Image (cartoon, rainbow, N blue to C red; front, top):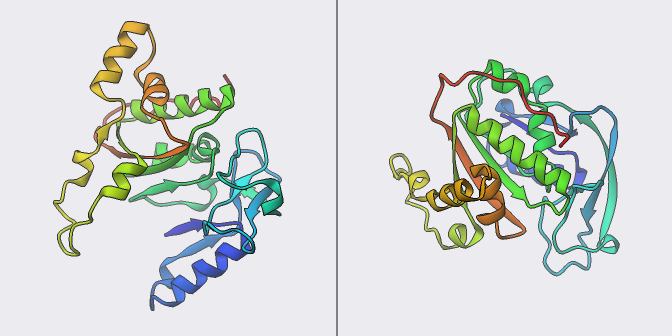
Length: 237
């Protein structure tokens, strides 16, 4: 398992969790970086642990037009600087689940995994997507989702109301619970029909029509392993 976490405060919590699970440390590699396609040092905004009545442990945003952090003013955060790495440089095996929760920089993070998707088997992807207000970043997000769709991934949407209302099956009964199948298709059939009528792509219409909250969870698993590997799209639009 590879975890990328640049914030020292969150690393302390992660380290504690690892210590409480004997034998797990040997299976874990931690990179203390941000994930970004360009090299360099980048500024992060981290919520201060004092004075925040609704502290969300682990939440961090990277400075820039696409970075967002919900519910915090600049006065409620402090800055931390970390260097960038690419997922292609730290992951060299097949991947059971690739999870990205980067507060708005999802296209940039996955853009660093081009060789991983081309050379390895990435079975499933979870994206906690943050809906951007920047048109360029919105375009980059749609292009990323369309590319994963072309690679053979099937997407499902789990909005916060669905997640909060879901009762997990008992331990031992997770296999075969078919929770993925019960989630909403992304794009849905209604979205595909509307996209066809309006001349939009299904994924761009899904981003506009089904993505209603500040952030939402998208789950995808690869259902077609024979789809051709095409070049990853550029981030620019």
